[in-house]
Length: 195
Image (tube, rainbow, N blue to C red; front, side, top):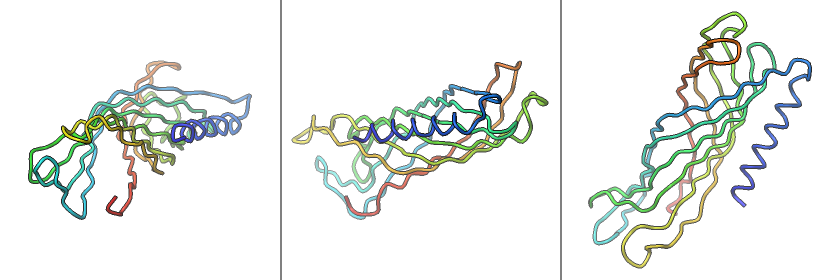
């Protein structure tokens, strides 16, 4: 169910993108970026006893990531694109005891994004840009790795609304090939209750 929501969201954004660009002026841009994602943890309101030690924080570890985009230009400077990214991570517990790995974690994001270019690629070879978008972040957990009764139990995945925004620069080598350097922030509100 969770994955269907994300795929449906992606399909709707792609359909809107194609419909929004007139057929005679369609110019498509696609990219694949490799990078590193810095992640934050979640502080708990209370401490939990795990394997004889107290823990009060769950941490989504930073890790390698890949981002793919595809979009269509609405004008020479405005691009509407779909952005998908995946980060390999682990969920760890932190507190008084030693850092404890709870499970493997895959973080997938699906966003529809508006990208504004500060120059046209028809004129400039180096084009700064900024973007903002909205969509969903999916947390896909693996089996629990803590020794004891919970080991091997699977944690259900979780999808949350998220926004994404950032900036970067595109360097065009010719009309069809270039490089893109991006810094992006994707804040995702999990929940505020103890669960």
